[in-house]
Image 1 (tube, rainbow, N blue to C red):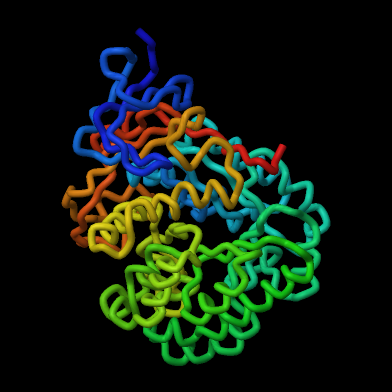
Image 2 (tube, one colour; image 1 turned 90 degrees about the vertical axis):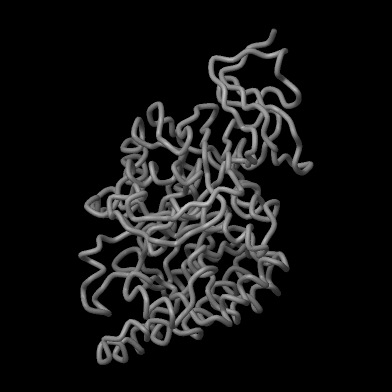
Length: 443
């Protein structure tokens, strides 16, 4: 009889061939057998997956865990706990911490902090800036680096890169796919007086309007064509951007967030106030409809949460002094499973957007599918489970979600990270098991 560290038995396994009624054997962190394994395999541990669907581990390629410097609202422990409780097995964390993640020592400090504390696997973006542009080709290949992230707007100091010549230098110094927050900083500054006068959060999508997003997206795509660089446009929020990006898929991949797919103005601002405030904004129904159409048409490659928490006290400041951002890593999969239940997308398409897609476009080694030799990252979900999302469930240090009180259908039950069942029956077990992700284009 063959022996495994973990057997996953009796589930509907979502393989590259589609759903199959098979078992999974995991040993030394990898998948070593698929098929009818009961009676021929023994194991140290097992998971009963009867009635559950077994998905490849969910990868959230945009989170802000705020460590170092802003740990009163989030940290690596709380952020990754929320990740695995929500069925997420790997994350890419963003560089707008304090200090900013601009150099090798900044990246190493984050890697050191995550060791022994992260519940899921992880990688960290390095910010692209005027001060490090010429070193980026070396920085982006460091172990544990998710790539280069550029803020064309909604940032400050050395992390803001809003001038074309700076962007050219960043684009020219590197070859990995570069992630971009595309809002036009000059237009945002010109228009900010409208909300400083009104102090009305309903005007958030008017201040940060369609043109501010579309103008920046057009600029960075043109510069990428000029320099030959691949791009990943984050949290696309407008119908007009989707129409434009559909014509540039040879070079550009596209992310949307559950928030932009689920919430809509003006209702969300009337109900949630500044808790619905994020950048780029949640917009009107026509934009939400366009994002769903882009998912159906294959324009969208990835769903990322843009988990960016602030405390309730910070969010309660009068608008526009209230900070933009909300929690999301823990609710990404439950919210999207509810959309699957409602018929807005198939389970197979969701897997492509949250597992196979991120692994493919970012070149993550050993992740993104249930196949022999791949990492044993598994998200076991009950598609029929009915739950209500509450603030009490949220593990983030900020302790809230815009979906508090929302009843949904579809829920993560067990989360397996490299063969370790870190969540069993919706409860944390074992100890943190996270390790740095490996990429095809890093050292």
